[in-house]
Image (cartoon, rainbow, N blue to C red):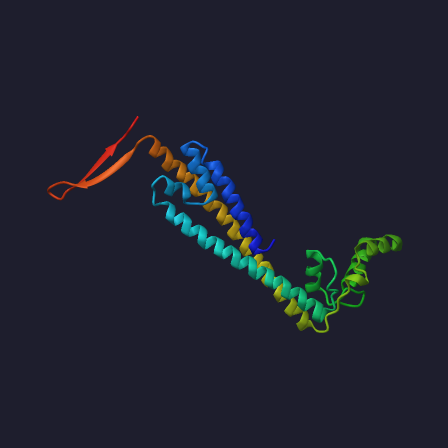
Length: 223
């Protein structure tokens, strides 16, 4: 899902939940509002504490989209590099293990430094003296020609590995920010409930100056 699609989905969720929140009691309404948009529940109950949550939300989503976009660019760049310098088939369907193997082995084959050569050595180690079991293991785990790759130099493999590491790091950063976004929603939702309960109980504070310019705090509790 690209960034534009994510934004559209978020807007749709916001609209649906906004309509749902309007039919709830005040406390639950505040909870749902801040669960959807941190700070919304606080502001709807007259609390300026909502502004920091909104600011956090904007900053966090900006960070998420940045890291997510960077991860996509790094992933595409790594794949293009593997096609150009490693001979990877651009039409192939590959999983994450395959891309990790591209970073670890010089080629897919049975020559020294190749993935299949490593599989062969593993088969011999696992099934010493049992050629049939060795062959079965090799056939089950080896790469065929449709997954072929061959790095001409160690530097090419190193450059590819750096691109994949950049992708992995940015992807991890995006996941971390996602977790922080969830926490921001949760804390704001709980905080909005606290404010809404306080408001429903009729606890109000009023600070005024008397004729001698001395501040007087008035507190009212409505039962």
